[in-house]
Image (cartoon, rainbow, N blue to C red; front, top):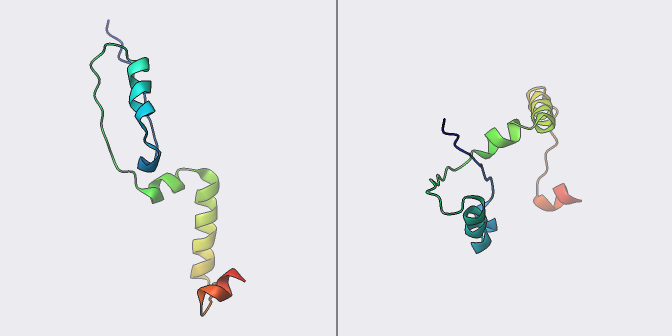
Length: 79
């Protein structure tokens, strides 16, 4: 029986450093590995976190009910 180990790394490309490759070499010494790169939809990610999903659904409901706060300028919004 063959058991294949699968490890998933999720990170922003700005966080990629050379030590990432070193980590793969350490985890899979002298092995053939397959590396897939897949862009992640941020909305899908955020909705996957229950607290975020609840907040987004609540905000959408408020928007549908006309309970929006509007500002003429960005400066007004940050005051």
